Length: 411
Image (cartoon, rainbow, N blue to C red):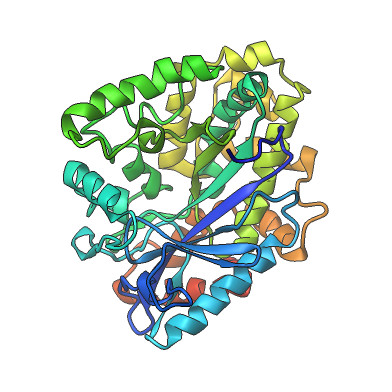
């Protein structure tokens, strides 16, 4: 059994990057060219000190993650950026590199290639059921934040707090405004696809915002058991377990005592990702401490209240108007008018100052959000009203070149 930690004693962070060809940014399904062990065999994980490289569902995506749960996030913006640089050096031999942001802006789903090595039987089962060539499976690079709990009481507090923060995450982290060369008008296309990618078996994702359940037994009854029943007719060999098939915006892992938050788009560089992670952690700490809102009020929030806010933020990003009273209280809004999502985040960030002791690059990333909004908004502004494949490629090449340098996109 993994060691169990109490609230905020440890953190786990995962960043997913697309692999692309240097000349034209077409996807390159070559993760197995760097995921090679000392014996020359292809492996799923390579530990490199405090950061580990891992495979993902598709062969054109590679994940960087904290090797172990960490006590502090300090230094990880630089550590992740260093690993992006190292992967770029290794992929240079194949004229390839890593591409940040949550969706490749020009990729078409038929270009997808599934990982064909370790655990590919599980991936094949998903592909057979859902056809993983869709954007919601093969073109969505995210950041996952894992937070621990030691017992049911801590799970109840953490899950309640996370449920209140989830709907606003697209308005903090959206970075995917372009799909197949077009600005769709949505701020977070990754999540627009994600919310529907398992529509064939809706029990897997639910309404993205998890049900208001606050114990392991209730979670088993309300979430895992319905997933298991819904999967059974499609998975006669029992390859897909409910705990791993749960696709809500935050998923509980009682086997290791943690909740994984899955609604963060990958940013342009690790400093921006870590700045966002620190912001979420600071707000969750405040909610768990019941500083502004008692636990009973947090736990009373319904999916009917929260899910519409999530959808608004997916579509409108930080411009979305938020008129949900429980979220005003959770974020500390005291104005008389209806705030935008950006107003709520600016209120919380100003109060909590989550990057006060972080690196200068993380502080700069937070300031960029406060003054210019999400990366999705900045990409949209930079591209203008009529982007071409050439202008999109030029901008995303700029983003790729800045990832290892922790360089922000400013407009």
